[in-house]
Image (cartoon, rainbow, N blue to C red):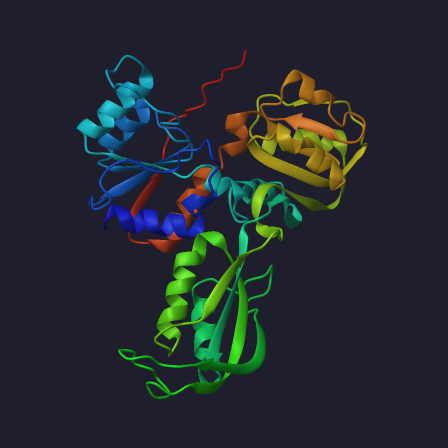
Length: 364
């Protein structure tokens, strides 16, 4: 199997267009046409992970965190990142990162955390705006269903838990075929009137090329009349963090003990116990201090994340409990998420979880 088959699948789950501006997700090292033998999944790429890949004869490493975040001027092996890159290239090992684009999708990193905590009714904590677009296309009446189904297959018309969503309005179209045209109906030089239907569907902007291609392939006209608009609507399936509810309220101290055990945290830093019971829980894998107020606005009893700075613990200090469980601890199950995605889609492809603990933080 070629590397690009693996990466194309992962990008269908977590499109690269969804990553944050500072991020560097995608293929970092390697040829897309490389024949991949097997893959190792890790949270961070360090030298020991490259050695693990060599020992297991794996030529693909899929990590959550990119090994390169910003520009590197030279690669001389003077630090661990440069040595890791050199070793990977020398051994023809490809490195692929799936980071913030996997953080923001509904079935991504935060959903896995919510599942581990057994949260029900999971929703995105801060859904993205300006990610949706609307297509309006005019079709002859006998082609409406074929065009609609082609658009739906390409990913248009999905709204929350509903699929195949569209709006249809009937009217009359006119056109005059000129010399050199090949009209499917009408004659060159004669104005034609056609009973048509305007089909309207919404879609996420990262699917635009696929949507246009699907529309044109299914449409009978030589020249398709359509327009696309950007929408300000919130897109509920993409965004930062997640929140949900426990099946029943739990004593706060008992919840914190359970949280520490489930997330394998050595310690949990938290604010005062301003809620005696925990029912609604908000989470964000990795650094999530920017979502403290969002968690408070959805009336969460506790917000679980990492990398909270001292002064951030004062934000919303009397309305919600803030719990810092550690960066590595909050994202460690991302490896299992990526592993499950690959194994379920490529059952005959050898994938293994890295056994290297890449957590750079130690506790006394």
